[in-house]
Length: 640
Image (tube, rainbow, N blue to C red; front, side, top):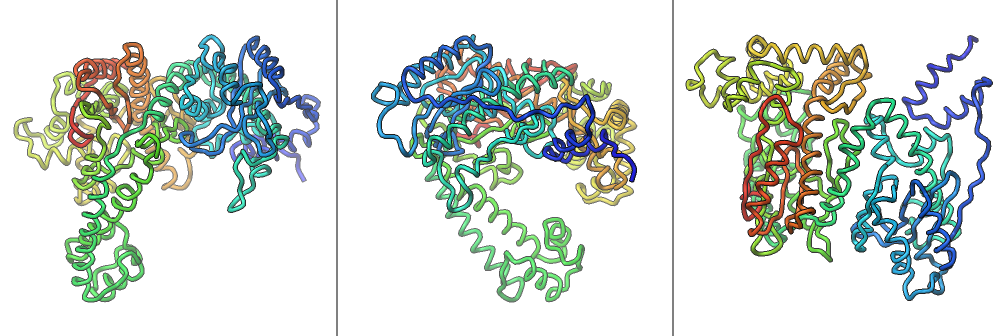
């Protein structure tokens, strides 16, 4: 048997995230240069008296960096009750300050209420901008603390955000994963404390001695990871980006999450009833067209009706997915009615019925969570609910936006949306003279493209030509080939190929940018945005054509979408700071794709509108004009 190739094994283990095997490999290789860490002794303190609390504070006050973590009763920061606080300022040491635990008989810290006492002692440190702090997913802790009237300032590092920036393709950024990867240290699993499934306990039900080590370990490991990840950010030239874009965004997101969004619950209920009636009507029509009753939600039963009873052609092995139904809708009325039925059913079950259930009982508002560590492009994502996915292409989908309105009279919704920002970024990155000239002249870019493709004067462009050009502009920009374009436009492949060829004849700068981007990615195995955010491209040379094609599309997509994400993040940071500094009552409540949404008192509308447009347009200057479309209305729907 030949010798192990330790370098290749190390790279493979890292890629597959086999961190424990990596530790064993380090020990097994037996190189003198490889040092296996001995068992470390942890010095964790459980704070049980006012004297111990004051002693801890004196240590925190002298520290260069304070690692902060909160133990709580829920993963939702808007519902979570504080169980305790943990802090660390030196490796392998830490404190846990308990507030709730099952065996507690009296208050620990000499006051009437331990939580109030802890806030009085720790609060000034947390609020102090001059005291640097770090945390793992610290936004969660910041939201909880803001609910209690404590604005955390001086946050300099978040290990989860740093890890995502370094490896956006990783499957997890949990603290125990990061600890295994970077420290070769196995943390105590949370399941050891609270269990799993039906028998899972809340953290306030766990004995103090068990919680204390786990909690202090969180703060300690985060503290130890910070310099390691900081060094990696510097080595990959991401440190400036991290401190310019991602970290300053945290206070803005904390404010958006705690402020929340108001939703008109009665209007949603009316919409639900209306949709239920529409679904009943569709069901009746579908069964009549089918000639018998069947379970509309059963793909197998639907396939029997479509292909066996009605005799429609099987396009893809009896599939009844949306693409098949779209292809069949001109051959029989049933497929189109199924599509309408599914559209209404999804709207109702995913949004209309679910969104009202998320309204917070105390605030009367919905508090979505915004994540910086999901999309590899750097785009923000939201959950509970996912506002990014609320459909806008259909009138029924847009109707949902009517329920999003101000909570108080005398307020309005202000919408500010970047106009065609991805095409403008492409014009900037590619340097294409045609695109740049069209934007500089403030022409309708889709009409301009149609004029070029079809070789007709601008004033002779028909609506159908413009619609085709719009699809081509966005499709080609993201690497769509003749087949994909033929499906999008419903035209033969030969015709879609002619359109693509004509497009690149006119926009040679775009063709060169795409070719150069792919060539760079094949050589360096990464691609980056305007400000330097990176995404790895390991599959760019894959032997599987489908895998390789997907990697190529993602490679072209990343610089454009990623730069758009950077632009709107910088705008959000600036707007949040200006609104706070000028003490406006207006709230930034949502970020959806290239749009920002605000709840604004009517008395502030003119000033806030001017501020928002100004900050968005100058957030990240391009070589073409950046344009923001603004609208005001009684709801999100009416603001468009």
